[in-house]
Length: 219
Image 1 (cartoon, rainbow, N blue to C red):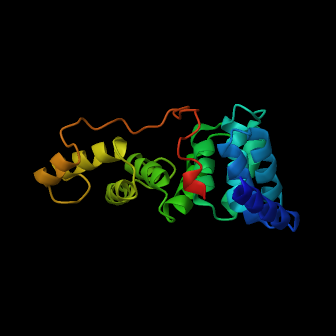
Image 2 (image 1 turned 120 degrees about the vertical axis):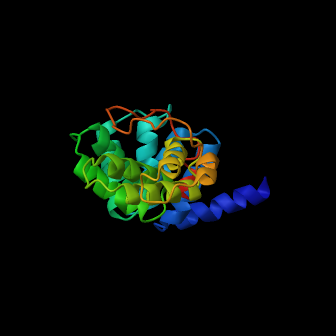
Image 3 (image 1 turned 135 degrees about the horizontal axis):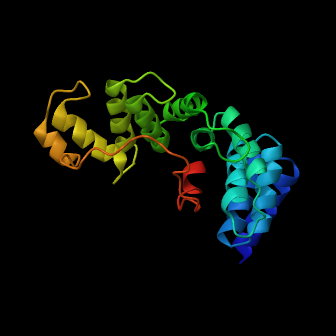
């Protein structure tokens, strides 16, 4: 309609003047219309101008989009560019690469922990959960059950539901293992009574499908 055309006109004019936010919006617009290649082109253009969010979009499409030729090495490069600019989702993704030794890098728990911590400090729930697991088992970082519990609590508060974080909280409250006094009520609330899961992380452990909320979490 006329309003949409007018909006697109002004976005394209702004994009022509190297406004990366407008490029990002145009990318999202085309993505929602299933025009993957156009979306990718806008995201990549903004990413190449230094936009960290656009770099995250670009990398995610290179890994997951059915309409784009997959390129794991290039995806890593854009995730890393975005992560170095401070984008928490990209920092988490770089941690995943080093956890599993995927793409162009070898597995390295120490490096993974560094990137998870950067993302966790920005309240990325997935990174908080992974860093909790690493503290719990001393993988790439000194073992610290108290810190593991705090990170699991933070992950759940930041929206991570129905997974290992809740199970571990239940276990720690049930046993007092993390330094918190035993609390059967809290253990029940956090699904205590479920056996503690093995928190070692054999590679690969990640699903390869595109996260359903990957757009929402990066805008």
